[in-house]
Amino acid sequence: MTEAHLAVIGHPIAHSLSPRLHAAALIAAARPGHYAAFDVKPEDLGPAVRGLAALGFVGANVTIPHKEAVLAHCDRLDPGAAAVGAVNTLKFTENAIHGFNTDGAGFLAALADALPGWSPAGRGALLLGAGGAARAVAFALRGAGARRIGIVNRTPARAAALLAAVGGDPAMRPEDADLLVNCTSVGMGTGESPFADWQRLRPGCVVYDLVYRPAETALLAAARARGHPAAGGLGMLAHQAAGAWRIWFGDAPPVAVFLEAARA
Ligand SMILES: NC(=O)c1ccc[n+]([C@@H]2O[C@H](COP(=O)([O-])OP(=O)(O)OC[C@H]3O[C@@H](n4cnc5c(N)ncnc54)[C@H](OP(=O)(O)O)[C@@H]3O)[C@@H](O)[C@H]2O)c1
Image 1 (cartoon, rainbow, N blue to C red):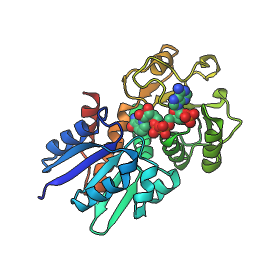
Image 2: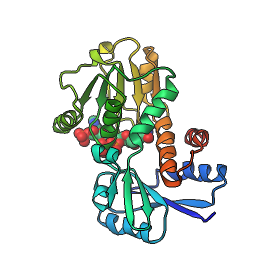
Image 3: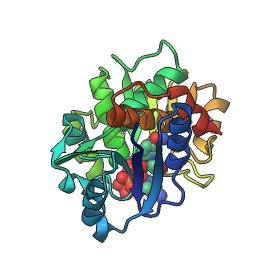
């Protein structure tokens, strides 16, 4: 088996857990290869992507702040990534750079792991945030049959744009939600919570926080203290990584290894 060269590009990149996850998976699957992290400035994105393709890399992950800008450097876009308007996974073939987004499917898989038997189908979901991750989650929930999707965001125009794109409901309130998802970066590395209206949430409303550092965020702690089923972003991180593996190699990813490495 030839050695598989893989990478993640972002700016900054030192915080990324992706190298740890993919290194563990390559070892567990006895697949020769290595996964490197490259700090790529926005002005260098195009040359960096073309450079990885020219060097024979199998693929790459793309993280903040490049997930949207990288679309312009893809020759082919998976329909899911095109709908979301963001790419987190690149695959390089002989003559094309392909863009995919595994965040939405990763979110749904993590939700299913955290709440076996629970489905967003027919339910109301309220999303906090309207950035790239919120777009992926909103389209994934729509695809999974969510009945109503509401979006609140610090910058209301971004929420309105995403509501329009995904067919969301601008009138949705916390009282209407069966699922509350934090898609903002609030709480990442801090003790802040993006939500305070706990008295307005229905008992039993599920709370999912995309933030994974710390693993137990202030939002999750507050949700659990009030009896809400709650889960944090490490599961999604593992599942979106497993999705990238499936795209790169076409075989079943070692999901348990990704989950274990994310939680290590
Ligand atoms: N678990 C996973 O696998 C996974 C996958 C993807 C992303 N994530 C996490 O999800 C978060 C969002 O990622 P992203 O790619 O969507 O980032 P992004 O495109 O930069 O969007 C950030 C979002 O957070 C909001 N926000 C930022 N600071 C805020 C503040 N102080 N108060 C209120 N809202 C604030 C922004 O609001 P404005 O529109 O007003 O700026 C925007 O809605 C990050 O923490 C990221 O690490 C996790």
